[in-house]
Image 1 (cartoon, each protein chain N blue to C red):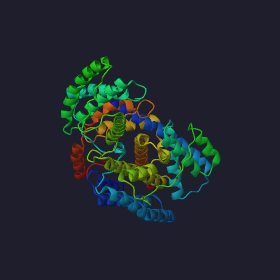
Image 2 (image 1 turned 90 degrees about the vertical axis):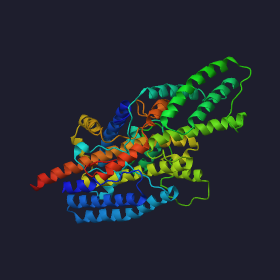
Image 3 (image 1 turned 180 degrees about the horizontal axis):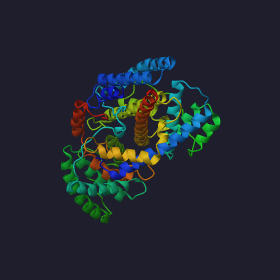
Image 4 (image 1 turned 180 degrees about the vertical axis):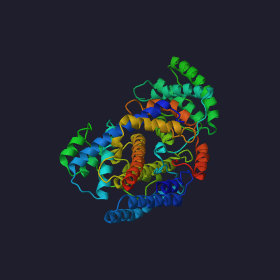
Amino acid sequence: MLEGLVSQESLSLNSMDMSVLERLKWVQQQQQQLQQVVYQSSNNSHELLQILQFHGSNNDDLLQSSFSPFQMLGSGFGPNYNIGFGPPHEAISRTSSCHMEPVDTIEVLLKTGEENRAIALKNKRNPEVKTRGEEKTEKKIKVEAETESSMKGKSNMRNTEASSDTSKETSKKASEIQKLDYIHVRARRGQATDRHSLAERARREKISKKMKYLQDIVPGCNKVTGKAGMLDEIINYVQCLQRQVEFLSMKLAVLNPELELAVEDVSVKQFQAYFTNVVASKQSIMVDVPLFPLDQQGSLDLSAINPNQTTSIEAPSASWETQSQSLYNTSSLGFQY
Amino acid sequence: MFYDEAMMNTYNMVKQRFIKKWINTLHMLDSSIEHPLNVTERKNAIRLSSDLAIAATRSGSTVWSRALISRSGNKTTNKPMARRILKKARNRMKNRCNTLRRNGNFTAKSGTRKRTDLLKSLVPGGEVIDDKDYLIRETLDYIVYLRAQVDVMRTVAAIDLVTGNLTNDRRNK
């Protein structure tokens, strides 16, 4: 009985190019399996009827809500959710997989370069407070840095350019601070240099910086450029996660006739060991999406973003796609993401 | 391989804090609700306790956690328990819109504006955030904790399935 469920479950769709129809089919498949679980676990036909009604009504909701964002997107989005039915030692969740390249010296260089840039950016927080000269200096540095970083290309190329740029930046900053009389701002080609547009540009760059952070968090954002596309991906991801919570709470309600979690038998230390064990076992196969850096209390640590952000670029979606494709083909794994 | 071991440890800590709180909130809810419950009521109770627990795990200065607590507090019929849970949050926040807007009646705005409004309706407490920059930061934080919630619930459900089957087999023998 359990084996049947496991084999069915292992055909999970987690490819990033999964189309809407496939995803919907997966969701329906999940619901059918949930119904099977219900049938096997409870003899109460009244409860069974309720579950079927729930799924019946939810189907329309799910379909409607699934289709509506996709009208905007026009492309598939690979969600990460997969309800696990496998054996317990594989039972830890994992979302999308990314392939990490080994750390080498270029990454170290990039880290230091990004840190310098981060410091320059952080100091730019209150432009009104600073003197006019300093403000223009740092904006100029940022403009130069942005011109470098806006060039598309491989991440290694970016590494070398950024690292070579850092030395230029620091030397220029030192020389500029000494000259306080006339600060010439070297704007980009075809852009105005008056104060208003500079402030506007700074504001826009701040928003685009946040968009880049979101790219790290939300899987699948690397392909889409432009604010609208990325907002679409984010919205889709949030909706996916919320639907997953709904679905999982339903599943837990089915599996627990009393309102308590079976995990209470397991102590918290065992749970911790559970998490870390699965981490160790899944290293070779799957890699989690690089997470947004959390500091000790678990709140977002935006100041630490830049060094981590650059290493996360090393996890391109291309290898994630190939990995997920191979995972999709092999049906032997119980948990796939 | 997780690209940052320290971050993974923090994430695991978040998950552990969440599950402790979730067990507590589920107990609280269980003692205040009359049994017997049908499946839908159980699901609602589990969802409610889970949302409260994840918001309490992120009991900080985020808009979404406070909005989620106040929104969930309105759903429970038991007022003393709701007040007890709301004490965990530092500030109260009025949640202006409880329902999820699903592509309803958007007037013709630019593409970004439409999507921003949709995002505001998804993130709890997003409607009151005017600054787009802050909204994106809140969304980021919310996504991380939402993923932690999903991860933990998935694990618990898998454990439940296995232990449920084991007890069934024991009973059948």
